[in-house]
Image (cartoon, rainbow over all chains, first blue to last red; front, side, top):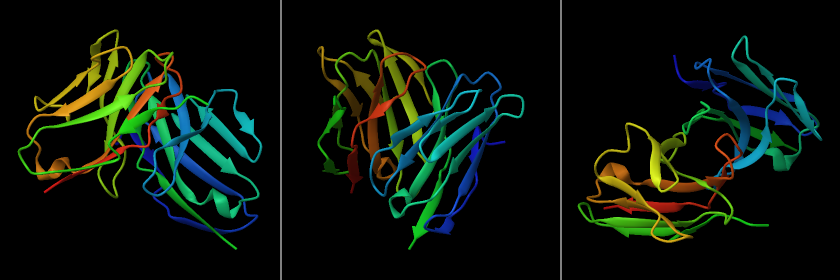
Length: 109
Length: 113
């Protein structure tokens, strides 16, 4: 089983759509969870941290289910500028951070 | 807003040559990381560094790789004898605390010919 596994994508959605990304992780001792976005040939940039209580930042909502080892990201009212690759990132609580392969999102007008 | 910087932005080298990639982490950060991303593939952890020593390294980080913090601001990745398969984007990152958000530099694109 891959350490961090994401929906393979790509997701093609119209502007205004709601889109959900899923991620699972294999290490039950993982401590910290994040969603990053990466534009083509650019560095990953933090979108949001993910907490067990769930958290929301504007149009973005992240959820963590430790029992199922599952993380999700919901984007509401998609914008053209949301087109990017979304990376699920898990830290083992030590010094190692694992990235998922990413899910590509295309938002079209 | 403070940011991580990396130099050079693009490095071209011949196979077998040594390269040094440089990073300046955010000034109050204590944890430093190197990652690589081969074109079209996922971001891969190479090494983490804290308190002037390697904290963790991946299986990719073999004897040809080394890291150093030569002064109070720079953090370097050295590849001793580059191979064609070392061609990738190399990202440096830093964080304030161990489980904290990591901030990435813009990357150095390494091309090995």
